[in-house]
Image (cartoon, rainbow, N blue to C red; front, side):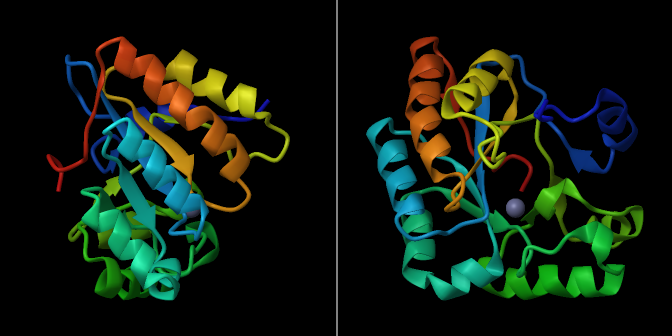
Amino acid sequence: MNKIIPPYLLRLLTKNFLIWKIKTKEKKIFLTFDDGPTPDVTDKILDILESYEVKAVFFCTGNNSERFPELFSKIKNAGHQTCNHTYSHLDGWKSGAKDYVSDVERAKSIINSSLFRPPHGRITPGQIFKLRKEYYIVMWSLLAGDFYENASKERCLNNVLKHTKRGSIVVFHDSEKSADKCLYALPRFLEHFLERGFKFELLRGVQ
Ligand SMILES: [Zn+2]
């Protein structure tokens, strides 16, 4: 079975350094997208968000933001939040702290955000120690699982419908390989929670 919720013990041990959820009693959800901007896919996501009047947080790679500057600006101009997801989508477990931090800094020169999400959720204590001086490190409460090759689009929808709660940080991907599943699950997910009085909020409070 695919993992969509991070282990409790990991969240507990790292809660002072990493953001896994937003503490709130209100019906608020924090919708995030990783790995874009991706032509066509991000455009379609922006159209869906606009049609439901929902704002979201995009953790972009510096590389994609540089390759597709108009799309990157389009996200920002629509009132969404753009945040740092490294320049080259580095795996923290396979990179030294110095190289990792300089890749994040390279992305910052393009994205300019104090919010950072490590690709694959992989980050070492040394990298956290260096980055937390300058960044809030945002993890997630649950993954839609849209990037798992063996997951169906119905399963992804079920994941987010079943596990999203007040204060959840939910992750979708605006990437080629997640597109079919994301574009199927997203409008249904938004509709479900909007009908139940939830609001989708940006991560401005922690920025
Ligand atoms: Zn990623």
